Length: 405
Figure (tube, one colour):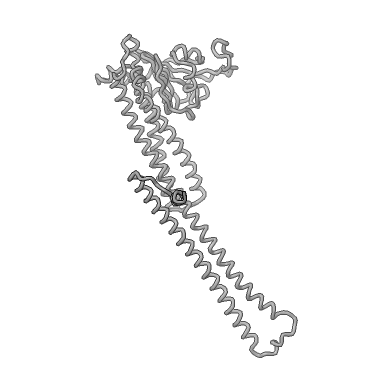
């Protein structure tokens, strides 16, 4: 790649002095009678591929220049963190909304859209880096020595560049989540269950769910295009521009392109599903550990209650003998030793009897739960075998009702 050209590209995105704040100008009723916010576009057009920013472009101007319906602006004007990935095929363009980038692809130009409310607007270095990466990748493909890449239509090179950028971001996100999951699980094994680890696990589960939605959204968007042969034929914008549109079934190039990224999205879906399964298994394990700890505390509490009841029974007899009434035992030389032994035996028998009943009840509940689990497992096996043999399943109540009829 030419060094001067690369330097010129970087200088075109050099940070400009911050302008003085001004009030937003109202657009005319012809442009947008309800909204006055604008979109910012970065245009790459053939043959030079020099980036040129088109600031403050109204929605009407974008729709007219790109020949897209107004309803497609909902895809381009939504925040990048909330939008659903989609690939919309139109008569003269392809509207792309993927991870980290939204763009309009035509037969001779690529318009990268940056909404006014996006975090990376203006001269943010992150936004400049994203656009610069897309530009370099696109320029590498169009100036490559590979004949296949150079003879590719411009719209396919641009679309593959956008898909490559989106999947690169998704792969980095999944790799980061995998590393965070491994670190968290290792911390739980070594340090045990603590409050901070539970909060980290909650945040990690939320991040994994969000990544799962993004990955599955990309998979769904590509799959929807692959299902429609008419849309794949309409993606040959260059051929359509020169009056030679493709017929349905003549779409091998774009089909191979989309199938490659569909397979990549399936791999990412499997990776995110594995992360979700690991987190769910860890969550169930934590629930079991906490439930077992809670049961042990309850068992200890009941044991203490039994001991307290036994001691209370002994205190009852002690209170009877301690009243200021004549019971004719005061003058007996061995009355103290007799009643002390009696109370010790009584309290001991009461405690042992109560703890024995407690353990027996606990064991009976465990056995009952095991029997219920085994019965449920047996019923599921019987049901699956009957379904595999295509035999109708009849309940006992139904059979008894039919016999009575």
